[in-house]
Length: 72
Image (tube, rainbow, N blue to C red; front, top):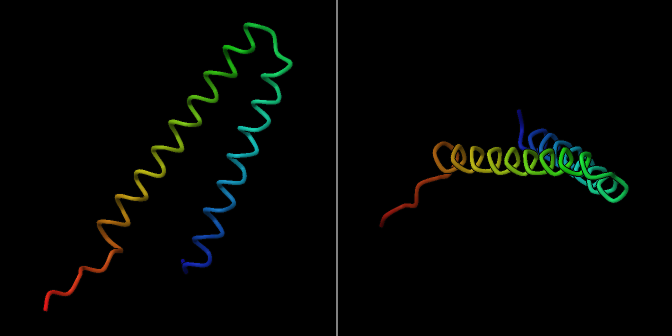
């Protein structure tokens, strides 16, 4: 997978996640109390998922893709 393909995939995933979060907040605006609890749990789980994906990708980048600095 090239860098362009990887960045397109990451951008697509972020667009889908952001769309789901925005629709979640729009539904939250017009929801009753039990539905608000469900939507809040859904939003928190999305944020945990995003944090996990970002941290795993950062770890993989630091472990495998970063070039070590040259010591002169």
